[in-house]
Length: 232
Picture 1 (cartoon, rainbow, N blue to C red):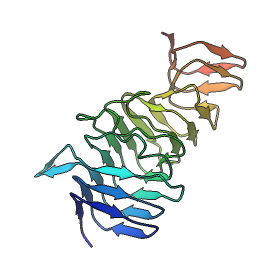
Picture 2: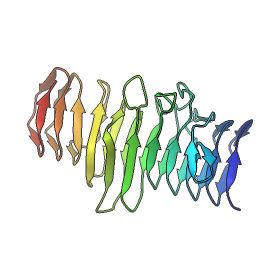
Picture 3: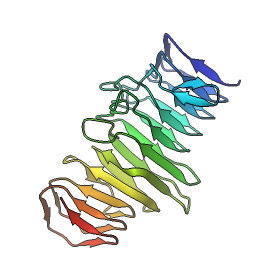
Picture 4: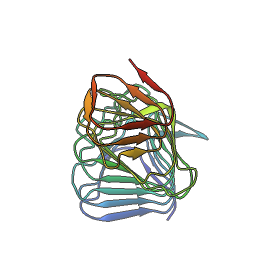
């Protein structure tokens, strides 16, 4: 029981389950989920702890198997100064608290692809803040929101980027999600704002926030925008 500190070497779960009763601080080394399950009852920091503050980590998180699962009951912070290209390709990272991405010297330290999914399942307000979000920087491959609170999800730093599917329970979302050309919407009602690339909208779309168009968009169905509409 208590906190767990990982500073060097490789921790390979190899199909097993590891429960951390306190916080997990990964200042270095590799956390390899490898078909296992990591349950953190506190916060998970991929950062270096310095007294009461946190700075960059040299650590890496590997999630490359469909069975990989991490459940963080607190907040999750990605603060590695190394790229995550090819390291976050599958599995589910479920977070019940806030999600932070601090780039330090690696703007792509949360570059997830393929079948990786971030699941936001908290019961209170959840904040998600990416300091470097974009197609060649830090991207959420697939995002699912099941937060049931009245406050919902709050996206700081203006926007986050999603390259795959966006699933949403139609609860409150404050802020913008930037989609890619290959993105899909599970529901055509989204309470937040959307930034659209060149794509075709073939189903009626209702957006609670702003709609920003960053490419050629073919609208083949009605679109209702609760906020502002702009093109760039």
